[in-house]
Image (cartoon, rainbow over all chains, first blue to last red; front, side, top):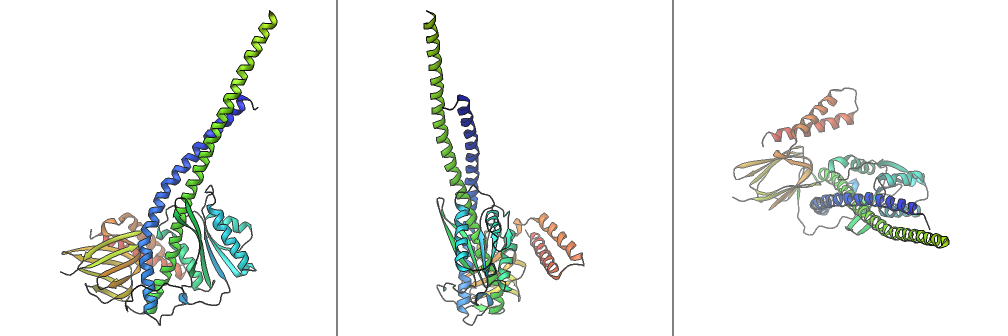
Length: 285
Length: 134
């Protein structure tokens, strides 16, 4: 059995660890509620823009725009959203695994795809495997505003427009509830499967359909990316919260069992001491 | 007086939602005035102020990057940023204006940077203009 000192040391170090994990859990919990709120306040914008895009694209049947057209695919772009820091349970590994598997099964060589990595963990994974990471963005704010990430989304959408990629997918983690997340792969561009609008309104276009699509479609694609980022942030914080909660629970369990061992060892030492004294006294008689 | 429901939505959340008598704003193709019962229409917006008339008062909202969707009973403005006159951070706008002006005064720069600085300047001026009316 380990010595009393050793057990005592382990108890105190486990206690300190659990204090840290407890603190991280609480930080994540408060970040989660903000992230959830951000994601929620984005919903009306997304719904509205979807509605308008659908009615414009369907209402103007002669509408043609490079972003609406499927072209032969020579190169595919993948956006992957991960976190900058670890300790978030399986949050990062799930989405990375899915993208990695898809790339391995779809592409033979590095020239057929490019990865746009948002978040340090994803970037490091793909860079260290020598995969084609064309663009990486790290240090995204925990509560990103649209203006902040505008540069990222513009670049990603721009790469489709200038023909670097012929299609663009996004991989992210959808926040279902605090304990349930889902890895989603979604096609961002081209926008050739827009859901039909509920009611048909014939719009007047000022100045012309083409010019409106020029403004509307990039904004729509950018919104999809921004929305996924908000969704992922909420998932990240909730995974980290769950992971830290488990760690804290495990630590307190460990502390309990160590305390029990400590008490037993102490009791054994006392008993032994008494036995020795009694034995010594008996020998003197 | 007949009114029309106006909502201004940005990716960071709804900014404005109210019944108004008239909306006037600057679209890419020129000034637009919208009264209740307008024909359904979609138009991209220029960087500028949206003026919302209600009970003899006019509310101003600074808008940049977006478009306007009109239905007979509802006007929706989807913008990348939108701020009401009393929510504008004047100090920040002044700073942004200065920075943009400095960048415009440097001659040795690419076309793209010039364009970007020009847009930034226009956004800052728009905010300052709107902020005067609070």
